[in-house]
View 1: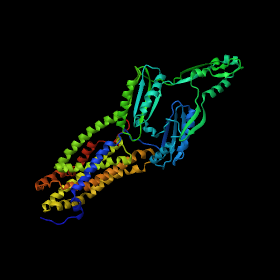
View 2 (view 1 turned 45 degrees about the horizontal axis):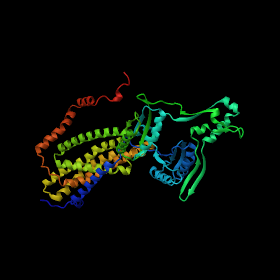
View 3 (view 1 turned 180 degrees about the vertical axis):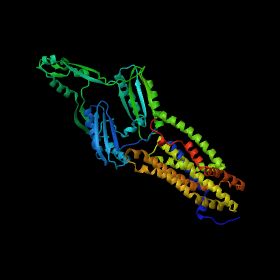
View 4 (view 1 turned 30 degrees about the vertical axis):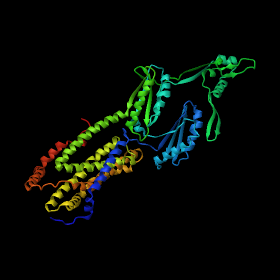
Length: 556
């Protein structure tokens, strides 16, 4: 028996199989555990260098919103380094601020600084006004970024449905963890209509301009600053008049101290009615109000969808009789369907992979070694999802499927060569650790070039993604990095873990010389036929592959 010492490096590495396989198993389990926590999406969220800040103050007039909500937020966010441009829109009960971010500023740290500045405004903003941050999405992907769309339909007036959605449904949905915002569209809003009577104005000697100015003064709010006591402060302002009867009794002119005043109802008709109809939306002949729901970045699509559906079920029990809350768009259903289809295809592919490995390697233990090595590489890829800011979506799953073949190929090449070298060295009398170390050294020395070539050529394919710019870079760069790191992990697993598993592989018996001769003849047969009849071979290939598309005419 030959007991010649082997390479000290590999002998030292292979001498500790329990410790190495324990760490590899821990890495595999960690990857599986992290994989269950990775957010699932329909398509990846591509975020532009733009941040939106939304704040809600129900019942506040646009002037109040601008003075007490929009202006403080604008002053706060302009102090954040990297802010290039600030736009704002103040509406009734809502403020929207759009921040343009410099291209070279990382969006994550910038958003964190904006949150810090907004947190300092808690004592400045009115009570129950909490600014919400959202990141901008490219217009081409906005249709795919939708999460849930609900419709509120029933035998009520459009304005009643809109009020029900604003006061009951939308606030409950906004309180669901993971929901970023809820947008209500549809219905008919109510507006104040004041119709002046020219004859009555002439009778009382009033000009329309004077009535307009007095109405403007009565219907606007007046602010008086803040009242501070200790650490608390309150806004002091006079809200605009909203009572319909009070507006009708508004005094426009006092002719004399003993005369009756001229009120608005004397010269005008004041009614509170629906706003002009600009669009009509119906479901089964009934008015409908649409609620569009979007979730926060990084939240789990399926988990948030389940919580929203539970909230919808509770809301249905609180709605008036005949009013229905319908789910018209649910991206989670598409994701669930794709995941079910993916599980079926992965299971079928895995079964076929095991059969092919058993047929090629002719060893259950060799097949287990290949699958364990591939599992470790996939676990490393799953562990990289969070640091790279990736989610499970169509693009990342396509990337994993793209490199799945090469992940298996690396391990199969090493396992097959280990079996060959173990057979040869066993015939020379090597045994034990010396056999394993020498077989590992020779196997890797034989296959190192195809291993590196196959892995690095696939990595190079993803290299152009680094030089993309704008929206495409944000969409595909993490995908390319994931592919590169997964291939690197596959190569490391095939080189470091498979040799350790090789210690437990059986030593195959030597192949008979007659069987080797028949195998070589079978492999060489197609080449002999092609060399003997080259023209016939080209004709068969041409018919099998088909006519190139560029040779076909554009029209007949």
